Image 1 (cartoon, rainbow, N blue to C red):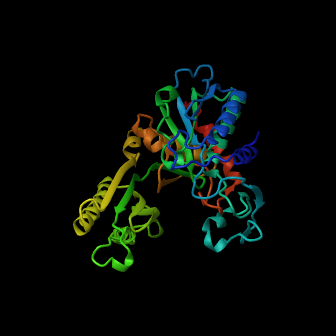
Image 2: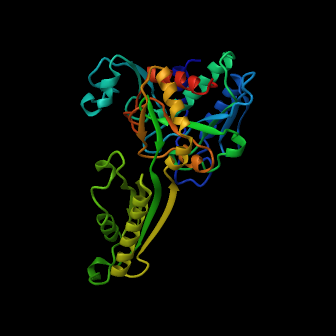
Image 3: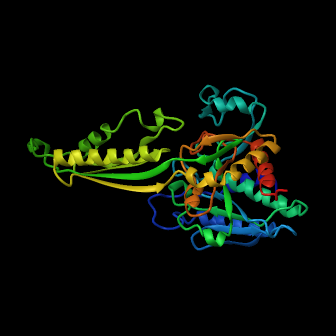
Length: 403
């Protein structure tokens, strides 16, 4: 099966994760794709292909004769899609792009003036949606590219390589993809995640990340007799948010600039809850951001009374750069594989994270490679068909034994 057909098959599975769930995987429907992938990996010739009880899929392609001593390399992608936009009943189609706006449906248009990336896609076939759901190239494109590369290598034993471990994870989009990943059982010395954006991107720096929940405890009294008595939790929540730097949000930052991002707010006069993510590439600045939130909470507790504001801060993952720098040959090797496929590599700092960030801290150095997609997590998501094919070429080259 070619990589395009495989990708279109995978996006037909609804695999959105759910951050409110306490199960693993967070949604049972992710296991439907996991079961399909385990069966497919076995069919194309990988060994020990299986899905474990937590929804993680593992398999490995044996080393070719004479390469048994080559250290095992891993390839990893995630099966789940973002809960930020609908992911069910995706109507994916191939659209030949000759420039200009793209009519996704009768009511939704992707305007060329709003997306500079389209200029680089003129003359290519694109996989698009109907503008009502996400596409799922984050990260089913990565899954399709890995499986197709493995199928090619299994059919071409003359291409020499060591053992290749393959892993597909659930729940990456809600920060849990590495929670129950079996690093020891995976058996790889090093690995790559295939979970990036535009073709050629190569990433080994990512945000340090934390989640923050701010719970405000107010006091509700009938508004007719509330003077000097009511503590409106919603207003105090608004005050908390207003004390954060207004320019340090995703809409006003780029590159290495960190941010505070308010994801969700709910409440009434009695109780209000704010959910944030906190991000920065620089560890000192990251710690400063968390301290800033703690100072605001402390100030409001002095102003309104002890216990008014509860702040629950939890670190999620850290910048993998420190773990990759001792293994920079992984970056040089990836660059060479891109160039052999006719793609100029570009080092990019991830404004987010991947499973590889946490796995790198668990002893599995794991930089990130592009998938080729654009506009992830929304209904204007798309991926050029040639990028899918190029990434298969890159992966086939990347895992071959050197020398």
